[in-house]
Image (cartoon, rainbow, N blue to C red; front, side, top):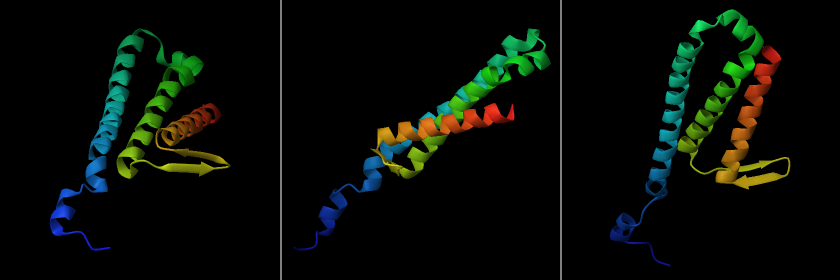
Length: 122
């Protein structure tokens, strides 16, 4: 087997070039997640300004703030991981997943962990 010529190497796309669009898409999802988090907080502040914030947070804090925050943080986390690493494989306790399935499993695990922390600490 012979080595490829420089022209063939230049014409052949590398893994980085093939995944560039995917990385851009996941980066955009992460940026949109941060924007939704900021705009959602701003909108929630406007809507809830007429209520007593102390009693509202005391009674409904995990539901009003915690769950939307957990969704956004888990989405941002998975988006950043996909933008940095590309497709990844998951092999944990007999569960094997690749690509989108691994992303979904990672999102579920991140959401569950954040929700559990909110439940324990609130």
